Length: 169
Image (cartoon, rainbow, N blue to C red; front, side, top):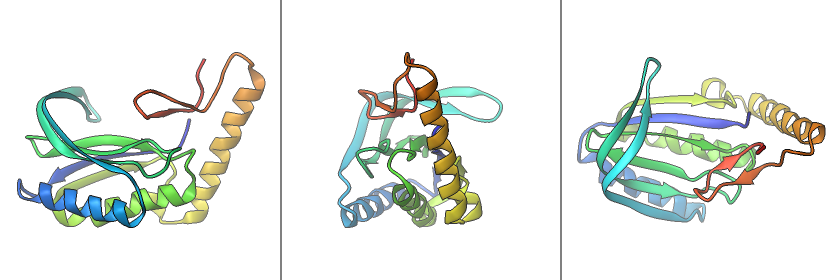
């Protein structure tokens, strides 16, 4: 229900990873976003395509930043296949956080051979802030309506993972 940006990044080459991480770190520092390095020896990453779901299992590295306390963590965690795939819910952080996430994705293109983005707020596709603002407002109203209709639900709720859920039953 909430506004989420889904993304898949493929590095241009192996040497692009340290450059991308440094760029993300600078971007985050300029906005006072906390950041942490990712370095795992054995991890499982969810991967999906239009036709199938598949998992990556193996080492990973990258960076995670935290755009806003009411936004999902923004993860760039690459496997040895040079692919990172994730999503970031910006719904509760608002318009500025969403715009900053899209701006960062735009800035990362020099390090990538491929970037696929699906923006539920439709800003990535339209570059129209009024479209994004309307989608945020509609989604917020849907959440308020759902909460008003049923006392058995709550939301939004932050999970221990740092991810946000619109409505919890």
